[in-house]
Amino acid sequence: MKPKFLFVRIWQSPPIARSVAQMLTEAFPELEMEVIDLATIVKHRRMLMGLNLLSVIKDYGGDVLGKYKTLREAFWGTPYLFRRVKALMNELYANKVSDYKFSFQLQSLFDTSLAGIPNFVYTDHTLLENRRYPSFHPRKLYSDSWLKLEQTIYRNAARIFIRSANIQESLITDYDCPPSKTVCVYAGGNVSIMPSDDSLERYARKNILFVGVDWERKGGPALVEAFRQVLTVHPDAHLTIVGSTPSISLPNCHVVGYVPSNKLYSFYQEASLFCMPTRLEPFGAVFIEALGYRLPIVTSNVGATRDFVSHGENGYMLHPDDQQGLTQALLDLLGRPQRCQSFGAKGYALMQEKYTWPAVGAKIRQEVSKVVSIAT
Image 1 (cartoon, rainbow, N blue to C red):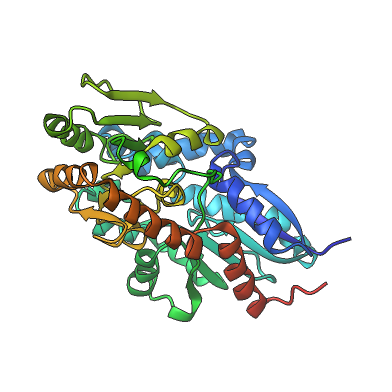
Image 2 (tube, rainbow, N blue to C red):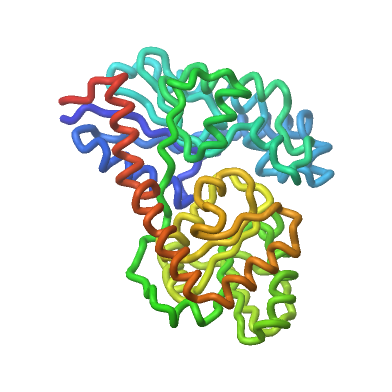
């Protein structure tokens, strides 16, 4: 029988949860992975659910009513639930730690470390990094009590794996984490990269692609206004919106809505450029997917986007409120298919170098091996 390790995630359905599970399986073939889905454990405990709803009212009731937080965000961010998850992990696994080489948790909403085995954290955010986004309202933050608990996640971790440089900086400057404990391993995309055309004809089609569910946060309204101006210069340009369903009355604007991740490839293949002028972005796997499909990128200079895009090399980055700059960037690329082609090639090379799951897995395995003997 193979030695085991624990993979702790909150939800099993998001594409990132499946991608990380596959990455870990391939990175540690000599170990058996046991998966823990925290949401399933929590939802099967009705009393815990009820008490946590009371905590939501006490801690964040005004924020939910004021629409600073969704009920879902508030539910998973109470100090009460943080402590209960920690207690549940100990109740369920503390007596079995000798069965596992280590634990590996996805995201940093809870401290799932267990005494006796190293815990590795892989995250795309910290609470305090949010303060650096121009559009972020302080009432969207979790409570000071939760912040103190968040710090225990990093204190109890053997290593903190992050997906972007800005989160590594936050861990060091905001949480006093030792630089040696934080390792930027990046991330892969959640969509399979299929062969794509890199001819000038593809980029001359003037097809702009947006992929995102959170329309407002991802900068959708700004893109629509920019596209309105684009049409006065390029009436043959097209905008395709995938993931969101805003009500838009503009020619050549196609609102697709939800598309399963295994069907997204055709939209990337047909696009000439990718634009998501996001206002807040912990990571954004869609950018990696766009790079993989050789698309130039137009986005905002916030969060992790500064790792993906080199301004004037593989795309353009603008301030979130620069509506004129956004319009000009789109016009520049739509009128220059050769530049699109060049940007797309450079973006693809970046993706191949840093943003594939095998590359991420290799870095994680290297770091885990410094702490744990994984030889069977």
